[in-house]
Length: 401
Ligand code: SF4
Image (cartoon, rainbow, N blue to C red; front, side, top):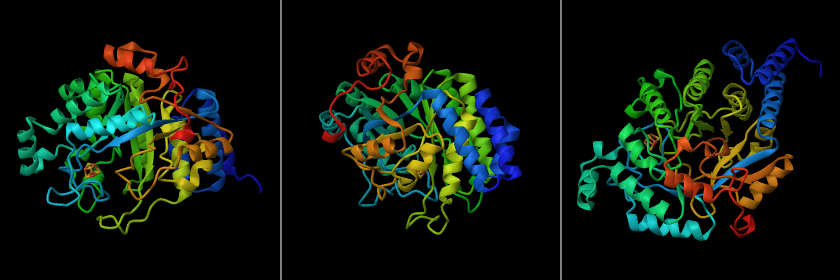
């Protein structure tokens, strides 16, 4: 196959970006506009792989976790979500501290380190029944319950990582006492998606200004932070590039962005977006690679393996450096229809692509090396589970998980 002028241009732009440690805006816009050309995609993938290899060699990491969906009530109604339930649904559930303790115990027994607290956004604002339930348990808010849940998990031997939607600084400070890292998907910086008929019309917490502000406040508080971009919820190419550059600017300013999850939307029955088309596989591969090139070497690029199980090889050719949390005992409550791979299968597929699967903590070596990012007790507990490399100390084998 002859090399097209576009492919030559792409290769030149990508090589310059790899040398410079990150793609600039003009070249990023050009590559995004031409990503549908298979030769341009190939060049972007090759550059992203080179950038990833220079940053961390052949390592692809994952975190062995327990997923704790503390409450599936949420005041927002995103058009693609099946996680959130109404209080009168038989599937509505809020965990008690005793249930958190039980899950933590099971996680420790299975060699898991991370307790992933993922929950709906401030349901007490929307639902009196939830407010009353919280009050009956002695909590003023869902965050109060969450802080106690994180304490239970931390004291039970796990390291919490919380993603609870929009939090203010006081709430993040309270959670920082037990969480070595926290997160909030930026999803998209596009304000259009809050418009009529769009994915976030009924989701006030998905206002990009609010989400960017929380990212900044987490930076001010020195919290290692997970963010991410959703692919295919109505955003366009330019808005995807905007989102990636917003993430990069946050890390340039606060040095706290530990990873960006690049997550493809899949239409789900029963949602308002059930008829919307998911992005083609090639576009998913391309945007994971673009993230690697834009974000620079300090930010890990994560692709959940259960959301693109047939693409793992191509994603690794395009610079993915982390598979995220994978649990041997709980399902992905956000995407329960998409089972996580067994850990041995994850290892085998990673090795088949010439990469090495390494278990990490809820925080990466980059931040673990800097005590300013942690509460002292959290730092001590986290480092106790790490080996010299900053990754997780070897424990039970993957076969046992
Ligand atoms: S904020 Fe999260 S949990 Fe709530 S509706 Fe949106 S996607 Fe679902």
